[in-house]
Each structure stands twice: as structure tokens, then as C-alpha cells.
Image (cartoon, rainbow, N blue to C red; front, side, top):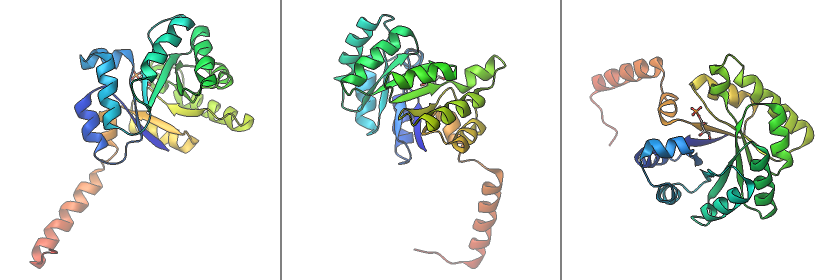
Length: 217
Ligand code: E4P
């Protein structure tokens, strides 16, 4: 399973990328607004830091303008993936991009039916939003499960990218279902490292090691 960072914060992306565990980045207009950066500059900077796919989202709502925006964004760097919303126009634009071998991430997916259409439109990634479904009392992980099953059954090549992740458990549940990618907010990614028994165990090992009076180097 690939790990993407769901952020447009350049410093956070830099420091997480230094771990060597990051396969890509997803951004969206809200994350860009939060970063306070110019959109094009931000994508350019992120693409220089991370080798893998970097999703940059169109903001037009009609297919023709989405295509113009997407073409401009795809010229920023070879690892830019165009993100389009799951609307009729978004999928028209997706089909157009996929015909030209431009990679597309179809975002704001909240149903299996939508995911089927995105696959038919040639999406590289489909982004089902777990947390936002859970927020309204629906079952985000169940949607992931449905999409993974349908894509497997019909041999769709679109990768399932678990998005809107709110907890480490969302990541584990998505991984168990076989998602190809999880896009993870930096704070949640940091907490994947944590376990109280790791801290406790390490502190005991270090105390005992000190007693030996030895040093490895
Ligand atoms: C995915 O690409 C989106 O940027 C993201 O996961 C949305 O998450 P949110 O619901 O926490 O805003």
C-alpha cells in the first residue's frame, strides 16, 4: 500500500518526505487556502520535494475549463496528477485526460455507483472520502470495501485511494481491505509510529544498556 500525504504545507511535506516512506501527495483547494501559498508555486515546490504523484485539483465546474486548467497544471511537473470532482463534467474531463495519458485522481467520491463511473472514465485513482461519510453517520469503510470488491470483480485498473482519513484505525481498516493508497494528514501519519509499549520497552532497554557500561561505537 502506498502512503500519500494529504497536505499543502511545504515544511511538513519536506520533513515527512525525509522519512523515505512517502509515495506521493494530495492537495485540495481547502489545503491550498490553509497554506496561504500561491497554488501554482505550491504545486511546483511540492513536486520538487516528492518524486511520486502530486494531486492538483481543478477549480472550474465545466468540463472545457477543467480541461484547460488541468493541462496548465500538468505542465508544472511530470509527476502532477489532475484532480477532478466526481461530477458529470469532472468525469468528462477525466475521460479526456485519460485519452491523452494524463493521470487523474477523481475526488469527492461518496458511493460505489460513482466509483464505477470514475473507473469507466479512465481514472488513475478514485478517492472515496471515509471521514466525511462517518461524519454524517454513514459507513466510510464499508464504501471502501464495496469499491475494492467491485474493482477486483471487474478488473478495473483504477487504484483505490482512501481519503478523508480521520484516524490510524481508518488506515489499518483500509489496508486490510486492500486499498492501493491511503492519503494521510501529517498528524495522523505521525501517530502511526506511536505505541506506549514501544516507549516503555525502549526506556527499559536503554536503562539496562547503561548498566552494562558498554558502547557500540
Ligand atoms: C483527498 O484527496 C482530500 O484532500 C482529503 O482527504 C479530504 O479530507 P477531509 O475530509 O479531512 O478534508
